[in-house]
Amino acid sequence: MSDLCNEMARMGRGIGNENRYRILEALMRGSRTVGEIAAGVRLAQPAVSHNLKILKSAELVYAERQGKEIYYTINVAYMASLLKKLATDVEHSKKN
Image 1 (spheres, rainbow, N blue to C red):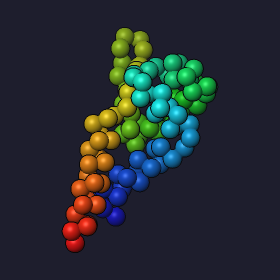
Image 2: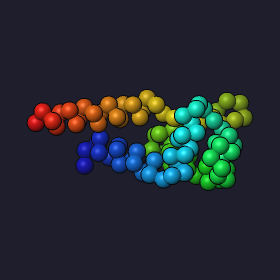
Image 3: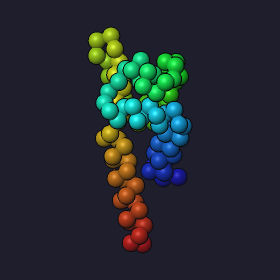
């Protein structure tokens, strides 16, 4: 399996759950704390924390401490680079 294939599979596992996708949707409006995310997606904080851990392991979000709070943000740079690699591979395969 190629590196890109592994990365796409990891991304798929990261967003392959409705709750994780809802969390990503909440983060599309900007950085949020676990409590803010939980309130926005109507999930318990432990469930949000668990799903954020999975999203972080898939590199789809990152966490940044600001004082006592931890803010979660979509890792736009990683997602964009992954999609660009995919587009490049698709274009390359069309030429072959």
